[in-house]
Length: 425
Image (cartoon, rainbow, N blue to C red; front, side, top):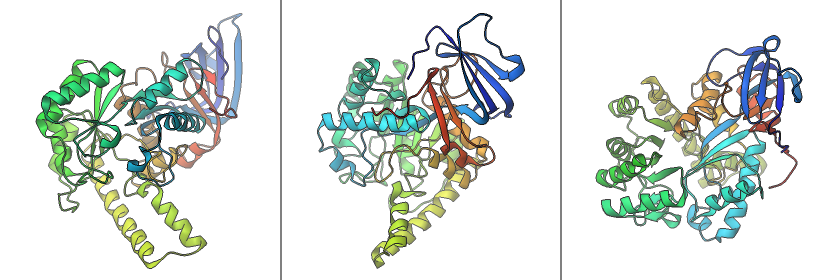
């Protein structure tokens, strides 16, 4: 990236979509001073100060949108299909290097802010230190550090394990001491082998202790919930974002409960559905099996597994639409690089939102301003507005006509600086 501190930058665009859900602006210009947007609007109305030093970028045939905000990543993931139980066996040094690689990959793809929802030890915190020292580059980081889990619970292998309210408060305070931006809680089991996916983990008192500590220090919480009771417990405790939000009973049956969904709305809680990582894309397994089917065929067991994934996807779409129907704010987060879902393809999550019923404009907002609100960084990023940081994605095509255009990346700006997408981390 080129440091343009204390100078002005003009970015001219054929079309500008500001990320707020408002109408696009044709032939628009953005005026940036240092790292901050100072003016934005029609080309004829936005000019640099007289005699100012100005760098100009001409994207008159392209579309400019806010830098994307992926509110759910695991930077240390490899995306090769290995379980998290096996990922944690790798040394911290290797995982930190992988996190740097993933961060640069996501930045180059147009994601300028990520919220990391759980990593081993201090790996992601060390990555941020390396970025601050200029050793490597990547997107803006919102970090949870180690996730909080019950003994043997989901992500317990690289999380803080706590039992009882006193331990939960102590663990939350320890994470805050380490410099986290929010606390990730595993409120139910998950893919971790020793956990129970359809059952809650922490009880309400423990969850409330964690949330109270986080809120008292001015940070937010996000809870992994793949079972209905986990959602209810999280709402009772005051969680700010519910991740996955899958309505399943202890026996694994999916039973949507509208009264619980209405509580989510009433309490202004965000939902990060992770469509591609859950049933919609099965963490990359659907693509993997479909490609295998085309290239060499599937075994009967693999075909049965793929068929079940398709049924699960249809059920998930119905559940997603029911949540949106009651007014839940759905925010986009990929959950990459978990399972086979490699980083650098956050746009697939936005495409999945459109397939599941969002308009293209709504999907873009879910992956920009609303994701920034969920991550508590919307005062800085998430939309192209005066006073915000100049995090900008330039694409070829019109994403309001075809959301897939967001993958046609031309250039990326972070803090007003043009990202060198040819440089490795």
